[in-house]
Amino acid sequence: MSIRTSLRSGLESVVGEERTRSLVRSERAARTRLAKAIAPPPPPPKKRKAGRRSAASRLRRSDPFTPHPKPTMSRHELLAGLHERLQPRTYLEIGVRHGESLSLSSTRSIGVDPAFNIDREIEADVQLVRATSDDFFAREDPLAHFAGVPVDLAFIDGMHLSEFALRDFLNTEAHLARTGVVVFDDMLPRNSLEAARDRRTVQWAGDVFKVAEVLRRRRPDLVVLLVNTSPTGTVVVAGLDPGAALRDVVYEAEVAYCLTPDPQEVPPEYLDRSTAVNARDLLELGAWHELVKRRDAGGESLDDLWDQLRSLPVGG
Image 1 (tube, rainbow, N blue to C red):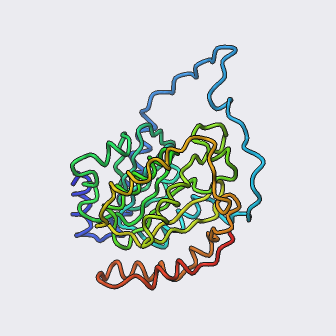
Image 2: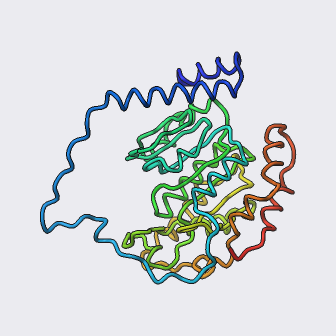
Image 3: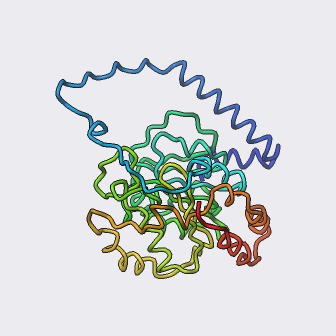
């Protein structure tokens, strides 16, 4: 347990959780103001040599898109809604980048990214890990920051290649609460160009959609919901089993499928989102409130709640 976590736990026992959160936010805001006041001015931008094009400028738009229902919310709005409804005790994020999704968390969090460059304030007790997810999970106690509390909510948005995302899921599930939820980004590419393993477009999903296919084949016990969010769709996974066996067997059996070279054959129901659920319908389920109650009580069956998720109408 880190020093800051120990101090926070001691403070909560004296003044309570809500008052502690307020004090932590005030203290963090004061530190941010001080850091900005003493920070040196940024260096002037480097001039690009004439005739050289940036990697981004070589990317192109991926139109035309396969027609699909208009999403009712973005991936970050969905994630914010899940934070609100699940009230997670712990939050794990793989793929931090500039911190847009990490800034949605107000709970104890871990963010993993080998090259994060956060440009916004994070209102959480967060441990930032500058490492690949494989190296992170290879540590002796990668989630020590959570002090023994399992992961309640995880967001996987790292490498846009399916073999990496599959490893991230299998490694994450071992640390999840039975009531935990995993969200994948970039799961519903709008055409095969967006789904390419070799990035060619501005909006890029990669071939991460294959992970949903693998989980549906190998783990029928899971709830795997395609969710129609902008821009490139998400998948919500529940019904997790932290004690699930044969994780290495699943990976070895599916890695050849993951490595299938371009062009990618994306199932038509992913492209047109005909089997995806509406994000607002998903968040409005009463199952989330009941899930939190049972998580805090412990020991109760969750099958009826997973059935509620499975019964959502599809079609975006």
